Length: 240
Image: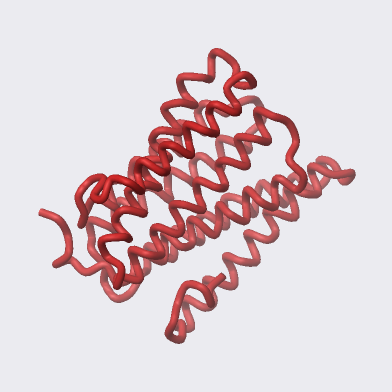
């Protein structure tokens, strides 16, 4: 994961944090796969501990980013990762807390949008946003009959905000092609859409083979890239 993110040698502290995050994320995925398999709930504790811990470690990466990033950008990214952590916990708890979890991730994506707007105009250019909205609409159309009536409005709102987050990150990257941080943020945003797409298909259309592997691996990679984008966002590039 780390080799894809940085071109220069990593500081020792970041290397240790990357290793800890990768190990914890792997434990979360293994725990989820074991729970879904024949091992049953005997391994639930591993998933419950490792899943939020991995997100917390990614939060720590953005928190201690050096050199000093744009305070505004980092503040919104940290808020988005914190909301994602809340969503992790809500979706793990006993009972059906899908809507509250959806709401937490909705807040996360709104925070990421605010971060991406710190130094760029909305939907400029417009085609990345249009492409992400079209992808979201296509998924909704394919899943529509399987989505319960009570969930349709929350899901529509969530898909619209998620697609906007991905589209804005992509548009920002297109206008800042030499900005490695913007490219990382765009990769993370688009992979986040992919993760949620697999999650939606598994929830509404039935089991997806090795769903926990694909969903969580993409989710942690997305958050890691977004957190890494905090480094190298200079204050002077913030939009007024």
